[in-house]
Length: 99
Image (cartoon, rainbow, N blue to C red; front, top):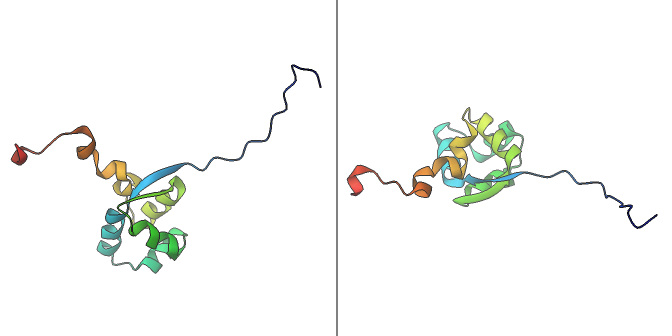
């Protein structure tokens, strides 16, 4: 090899992650009358994953997992994404009764 040649290593596939609203996930699961086990089965994820995600208000998860859970609940992914459920907290807006 000469000084200008570079060896490139194969890149590993990236696993895109997001933050899920665990509290909202639990609320929606209960509204749909599902146990954690039933939701896990419908979404194609483990029971451990559902329990872990619900146990934290802001829980990191793979985007694919978020999409599977949302589909199993017949909801849009933004409905259980932390960013999708907390926009009012991020932009500093307040409701009129708080003024």
